[in-house]
Every structure is written in C-alpha cells, then in structure tokens.
Length: 189
Picture 1 (cartoon, rainbow, N blue to C red):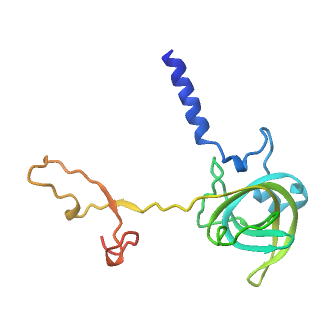
Picture 2 (cartoon, rainbow, N blue to C red; picture 1 turned 45 degrees about the vertical axis):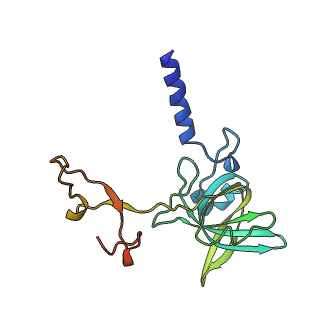
Picture 3 (cartoon, one colour; picture 1 turned 180 degrees about the vertical axis):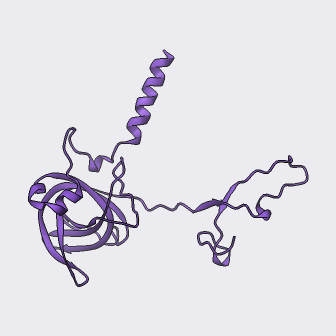
C-alpha cells in the first residue's frame, strides 16, 4: 500500500513540475515548431503550431487587432521564458482584439501559443528586420517577480554569537544591502 502511495505522489510531483498553464496548452502529440526554424526557413514553418515567449518590446493596437513585438528567449519546461543575456531575435504576436499596453507593457515576460504565419518586414530602430509572426491562440503574461536578492554575508558583524551561543559558527542568508540602507543594490556589505 505504501508503495502505491509513493508511486502516485511521485507521478503527481513530476506532472506538476512540467505542466504549462492552461492558456498555453496544445493537444497531446502536437509538434511545436521552434523559433529558430521559423527564423531560418519561414516557408517550412508556415502554418505550423508554435509556443514562443520572451520579453515585450512594443505593443501596437489598431482596428485590425494588436501586434506585440517580443524579444525571443528559450522556454523552460513549463513554458516560461528563461531570460538571459542572449536572444535569437524578435517575433511579432498577432492578437485579435484589444490588448491593454498598460498591462502588457514593455519589459514584461509573456508566452504565446499560436500558428506561424508569413514573416513581416519591419525595423528595429534603423535596422531592417524580418519578423517571424505568430497568430495567437493562447497567451500567458507571467507575474512579475518580487524576489529580493539574497546572499550569505561572511562579515564579522553578521555571524557574531551571543555569549550563550555554541562554539560553532552558523551562517545565515541576509538581504543584500543597498544605498541609503535599502535592500536590493550591492553598495554596502
């Protein structure tokens, strides 16, 4: 009986770790076309299903719908873009209807599921660029992270013991100190 419960708990844990949000789900067995394929050979990727995501660069609304320009990043196992110092490029997500640019604002992390359409020519500043496009079926705006940076401070003031403490040292993570005594910057340690 215990073996049954441990197996069930293990399966539940594994499935919970790798599921994408319902808004981004696709039918089981659906092949998702990677962004790089659409970038390198758009005619081969046309009309394929894809799940792409990244950081919003621009939102433009019109009577025909909304175009969201996104800096593409690789997605982790549950569909969230892993923002790093490198990107494969940008894509445009075409959404039917109005998308509020105050909610989907520049810098937010977003993931889209949709059908790859013909690429569009455009510009990034003065650079001419061919944007892969995605006709959006599902979208998910990831919550902004308010995680505070933590580190272990090995400075003498942070691990002093009271007179009644054991003779061993215990190090604790402490908030990173900032300018003016606030937390977040790395000025004072």
